[in-house]
Length: 402
Image (cartoon, rainbow, N blue to C red; front, side):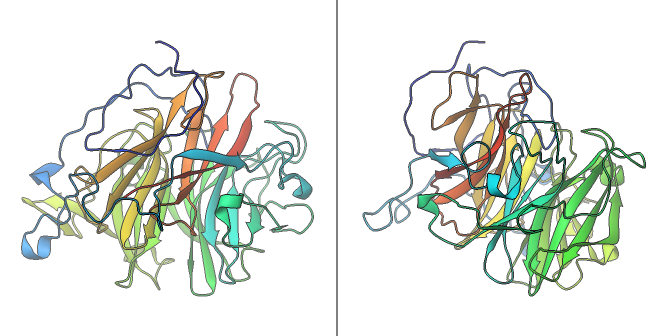
């Protein structure tokens, strides 16, 4: 495989309508986890069973965003679409995370707290700038004030005070598990919910569970609402979730192996801790419907996931291990046909020494900041050099869609 271009510049996140090869960009070998990003080559996927995942109520096909932005959605002088570029490192040397004892870390899943501040939930965290050494904690929560994203995120607080604490109560490498890693968080009213994975080595999820906080993320309680690692054929391990305006929370989930597709469930927004209230979306007897056995709504090789409502759209961002990039889809409804959703690939993977504003070596993550707009979509992207264990950090990027 040939080296990526070494030129430094920025580019807008032009939409593509199919998921396929990213060309001759290098793929660097490494680990997987809440960790380094490895691709195994492009994957071409077809339509789902029946050709659509539309709303079964009227036999319709739902949203089919099969074209790029049209008239009325382009940039204007008052609302320009951001050119894709890196804003800053969020963790590591010289960053605001250091004052809270956070050196090497990853993920940084952003969620708005009930008090309006932004929480960022990180994975395996160390005091030193890299992997290993003292202060191994996971998950860890840092905070910032809302807004002013173009100036760059600055952390102003942490769960635990001056030294960011591990927010879940367990010890690493005991009782048959190694580390507990966050998948996604959501705020409903005055309560925050965190879905996390209990791992026995990376890629081996024993179970996943929901924890809750009623004090803006300072203290968390594991609830016992959990899913075994092999439930839904392993596709309930790594989650993302978002609240609709219809009284439901929608979850997309996959395996924590970066080689599987995603399935969809919904749950009433007041029953997140009632495991029996989660309803799958599936294809049965020639039609899609709620309550059918879960069917993959999009095939592929999914890593970290982030589903969010941004303005009047639903946006899914993820680490695409097949294409070695951050992929974004924009659609109208949680049951839209994701194969036909407008697709963007703003940040691609590359080789060390050949990075720029749109090319990142061993990238993963891709979490959407809650203060984003469609034209200024801020992403938290991680990278881990698994040969040297540094860089191991979270970074802030911005791109634009629609």
